[in-house]
Length: 186
Image 1 (spheres, rainbow, N blue to C red):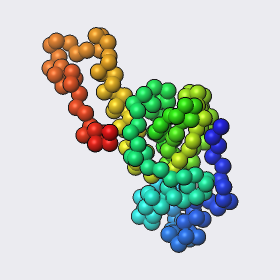
Image 2 (image 1 turned 90 degrees about the vertical axis):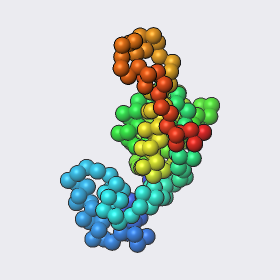
Image 3 (image 1 turned 90 degrees about the horizontal axis):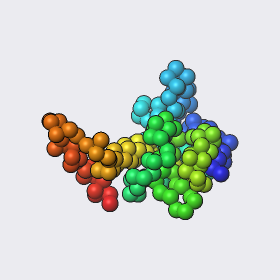
């Protein structure tokens, strides 16, 4: 069972200040903004230009003793969308990238509650292998996965899903445009 436990007693902000990426004043200012906005600390630090997305991913990887992995390095099969709702992936900032037997590999962009990880294991009948990646890479991978699922549905949809003969967009719907980046990743 996957479990998000910190392997170091340091919090994310402490990792950044200890490494010299963020000053104590910048951290304090960002923590105050976090209380007001509810956004993740890493997101706010990136938004303010104090750290990069890669810095955040590496700090989270250090904090939880998890390996770093970019989902862009993988061709993610579109059937990954069948078991896990896209809304869940977006809300908790993770994406499944591969399944090997009963092992489901997922990339997270920040801490994911243990209850969510357990729910993903139940939904997929798998044990999770968790990696850390950059938020923009995770969001891009979820977008591609969602689009691939929609394209597959259109291609294999029933006759009821087919556009009506008088539909002005019938030609566009009958042959959806493929994402050139997705083809390049194949």
